Image (cartoon, rainbow over all chains, first blue to last red):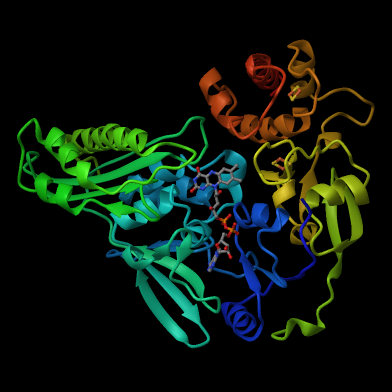
Length: 290
Length: 167
Ligand SMILES: Cc1cc2nc3c(=O)[nH]c(=O)nc-3n(C[C@@H](O)[C@H](O)[C@H](O)COP(=O)(O)OP(=O)(O)OC[C@H]3O[C@@H](n4cnc5c(N)ncnc54)[C@H](O)[C@@H]3O)c2cc1C
Ligand code: FES
Ligand code: FES
């Protein structure tokens, strides 16, 4: 359980990160280390060079331009939970992040690391998908944007090249007064969720749904957006709506593993979705306090 | 620096441990946990799993609780580290948190204790009057195979009360 030998570098600019990752083989980017270090210790990952991002100025900023919110890739999960800007404009982010791991891991784990590690049960990819977030990526070849929807290639494999660096994620917050809910089930506090559900709701005249987003985690290799359920939610206001939505989730492809069988996961999808939607509805119905 | 060919796999690292400035030569792959135990002879920090699951290696890095098995020693250049050895007074008087563990039978074999103490040091500095549930959430990342946690939670609650009175 000891890492293999490697070289450690701590560049102080994005430019120098990009040069190092483009000219050297087998460089591993180290953010919070909460997923990478276990794999290095277990020698599942054998890097030649470990590149620490913690020295780069400005990579942990949370900014609101009035239109969109940008979160730097090196923003620690703890900083997300404590961000007044996010608590006010995107409480879904804060609620979900507070369920990640434990205080010791949230102190150091980053949003960029969560998205790049892409555990199927991770909270942040689910939230980012629910918000239609976009990831900003840089390499020596240039800059590009990637929708979170297109991030997962397959199991724990993001569509990011070895010479690319994730610099920030960007999304447009929902209108003031929107409702949100994030629920997950894990066997112990801080464990990876078996199934999670994120819901966002916007109501017209506190009654009919005019906008909805529903995403499940722990079900496929990446976050699963429930488009059919969102369609059902739109423009309906009858009381058995949530039941109907849960019915529509029966067709979603669900995998089973040593953690939980397909049947159990299916059951949890219903329970978590109901809780997330009910909570989102309740919150959307409350008057806006500015 | 673009070409990493020239870089060595060993560095000198300066850090402060329990208020004392130290300088150590470390292989880049050496974890902070192993550095504390083997280079600095501070064996109070325990290593249970070496992959972030048990919390027994928790120390404070610049006042923030951190798993030292998931941290490289080279990463903490210039940082200030607090380990369990830094809790008691130089004359041996225990820290109120340690006293509370002592009074409440907060440990049996003691393997998990250094990690729990360091985690609670951070937690109690942020929450002076926690509920039992809040304590349980705070220590969710620390495994104990002996106590069943009840006495640890009791210790934390009593420590909070002693610390409040001494403020
Ligand atoms: C006990 C424990 C419990 C946990 N529980 C949960 C949980 O419930 N939910 C959850 O989601 N996570 C959980 N985690 C993992 C979480 O803590 C990590 O923070 C997260 O998965 C990775 O973030 P990081 O900053 O630590 O990234 P690292 O571990 O440093 O990196 C992860 C991967 O991303 C790459 N990477 C990082 N940043 C960038 C970047 N900017 N550009 C390109 N590539 C990059 C790295 O090269 C690496 O491959 C847990 C971890 C532990 C130890
Ligand atoms: S030894 Fe570090 S968490 Fe177990
Ligand atoms: S006292 Fe033995 S592991 Fe906690």
